[in-house]
Image 1 (cartoon, rainbow, N blue to C red):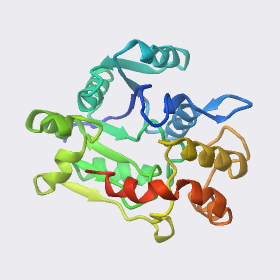
Image 2 (tube, rainbow, N blue to C red):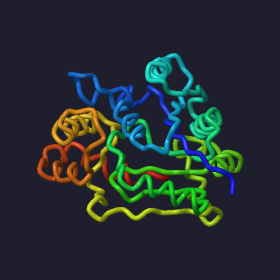
Image 3 (cartoon, rainbow, N blue to C red):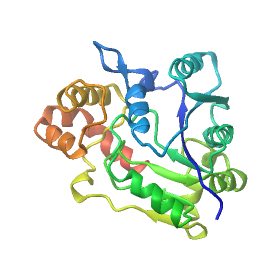
Amino acid sequence: MYKRKIAAVIACRNKGSRLYGKPLQNLDIKTKWKILDQIIENIRSLKFINDIVLAISDGIENKIFIEYAEKNNLNYIIGDQTDVLKRLILGLEIVEATDLFRITSESPFLFLEPINKAWDKHRDFNYDATFLDEIIDGCGFEIISKESLVESWEKGDTKHRSELCTLYIRENIHNYKILKLDCPKELIRKDLRLTVDYPEDLIVCRAVFEKVLNGKKNTDYNISDIVNFLDKNPNLKSLISPYCEKGYDSMYL
């Protein structure tokens, strides 16, 4: 078996009809700790991931991500705005990685606990894709082989090359070796979301950062503690409630 190497490639762009510049919005206004800062901190806590690449959309409005990458010693590539899948593949190529660790650029509270074992299984049993799906929106992750992504790009069409970059694999799941990870029951909560797509999401994530992470730049948090905090603050849950059903219905489609 050939040696597998995993890299985190994060698709970044500033345009957004609901909230502009989501990855660079401040989680903490006082210190200007950004959503993307927290995401990078999360990934850097995973010792088996040596390379982080920003897959930046072309366009002058996205130049700020180039500056961010250079300031934070990150690799980056620039590619087509709509062909997100191609950008992810190019990101893997520049660091010579065989597998992608994929999360979105708007989700600061990754469920860190199962990731090390997930990569071990994915690598040792030669899976094409590993999915943690049922968890709260924004806390999950995907691990996908570069070969499967390239095949998706070659055999899929425009929709498969969009931000729905694992859609082709999911639609043709019997053609791939898939590992679906079990999610703790208490984290299967379709009434919650921890990703920033709307201004209300940002309010909630800022409150979580302040009250659960105590306003500190760290990865020492527990998703269950976040759930308990939100359950005790129905005013925050009511802010994101209108977006939960639609978000879960369209998450992988």
